[in-house]
Length: 241
Image 1 (cartoon, rainbow, N blue to C red):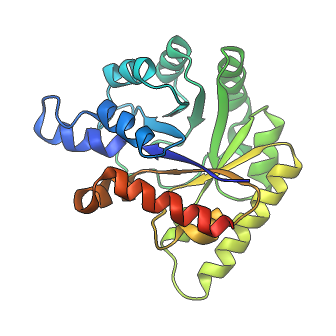
Image 2: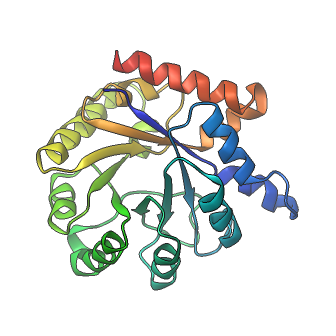
């Protein structure tokens, strides 16, 4: 089974917002990413709108012919927006105002009633709901218990390790993927993945999708977006084979 590649276009919006105005347009970047081989587009509408803005989401819904994966915090404001747009998928992520990027996985175990409410509302609206979590057996079991269709395993810790610890973290992620699949969950993964480290994660048989953004947008500065996505697609496919 091939691994789907979801391209996160948040940081095109980050560049745009640094100067104001409309350039570069994250929606045009999303269209270009799809033309280059992306299987889907991911966008995180944060509470502080530091990159993707509300009008970007509306335009993405109109422009894309591939699945849109909306990342959002579990807040009533974001729920209202997601219900209004009904994207193909919604990934619920932890969000801290002061963080530079998402720092870890959701605590599903400690927030089951609240998260169940979000999962049920979004699922009823026709969205596939994913929970962004650590590869912890209890968190995975809780995700299945509250009705999520998908989990996205946080690979940030793996991406920042070196030496012998890397193999242990890959084993932890692989074990989490096996457990999730056994519970009927589709398994995605992402955060901090690059051409240099994507192979071991792409090689995990249960992983159906990888969501990658920051590296691809950064690499596009040097090689172009199509070339960066093509290289990532080739690396993922090679690891799977």
